Length: 422
Image (cartoon, rainbow, N blue to C red; front, side):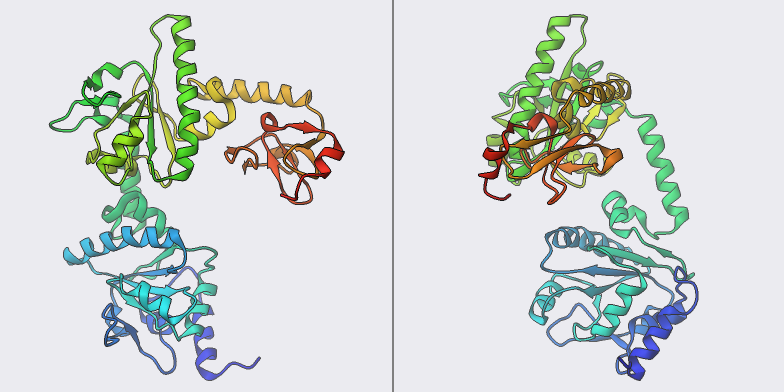
């Protein structure tokens, strides 16, 4: 298909030179079209226009997003907060929205929440060219274009992780933040994680007794990020309660003073939800609305719940994958150390040698084959218990259905054949 002059000029501008280098003099080539040298401002009522030339000398964030996708809407709220702080500080930064919305109405609705600039919804060619240029494979996606021509592709992760501190989004700044982060983790203690001025305690299950944070020193502690409104949390919490009791009972039987505790870090939306949800739990909790909760989520880079962070008796982080380890190994995962996990993996390998190479499962009509990461397996979501797995699994090679070996409920082929297709 022949390209018109506008499309030909745009494609040429986008493909010349190093794809990782964007000169400020080429912002117009990137963002303009033959008939348009402007962007839409955040004022949607009169479609106020801002000249693309006004962006020269600024760091620019190209924001690929869509109203229909929940992760985009969630990130949008975070990005707005960072953007407004940067603008109030006089930072030389701007964002340009590159829409993946399905229609003009959705675009306008989404854009109403945005305080930055936008490429017009009708300019499909520019949006397509930008997606090709920066190889955008998923949204939300935020790429930072620097005045010196350099680019940074992981803007979403940086905003989630560092917020306003990531500005001006240079490699030097990011290395400084990573260095500070390493130093914080090296000097980490349980008290500096959980205490703030005016509060040195946690709540017990009655929510009337204050438990000193210092009383947890020397214990293995799980920080449990969760919320009542979260469906995966509602499924995982009962399992965690059962595992918690089994670990506690096992340690009591051994003696020696070793202990395990969990601290609930609430993401609930109101006090009533917190009270109701925490009332089902047997462990300790940070008070609802405690400001340190946001700090902890940022510090541990918690991007989804439920999340279980394991802290060792010395106050150092053992793993951020406590939830997955509980799903894989139940109470045997304790104390979640690398040495213990290596032992469990070896035991799993030995156990797998004794498992049938294939079998039929009560929940699926096709034959399932035993696979591992080395022969077609890998991280998966168990179709029986809906929890994550890795390593060994029984997998339908035809349709991808997978279950943990422990979730396998063997049946004869005739019984399996009667199961409705899943």
